[in-house]
Length: 124
Image (cartoon, rainbow, N blue to C red; front, side, top):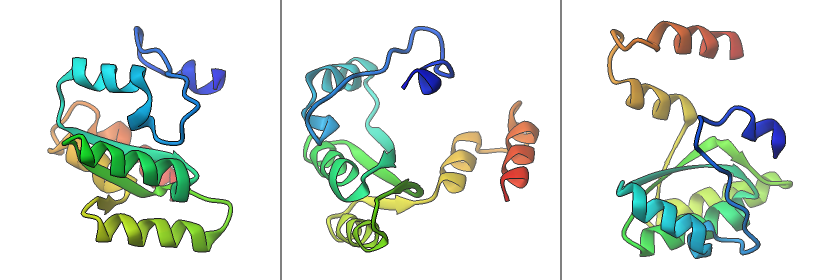
């Protein structure tokens, strides 16, 4: 966790949780409520447990939820596929990380477009 925390913007603090669904973690819910945004993009591990339960819980709480399929995973490919199918059936938008990134940038004139584009090309 320290390796990831080192790259977070100043003032952003990781939230510890023990429940499988982040949507059930009080600190996570409070952070979302304070932020006031209605959309959440999820990425992470154990797509068939934590990502699935978080996405469904957030949707129940009125959030519009997007899951970056290629930025999630499970120990077994079948579990990952099953989770993505279930999320789609339950109305969660399953997308990919590159689509999310370019939706955030919106325009090739964005100040970070060239840097992000170069990084994505290097990643293959």
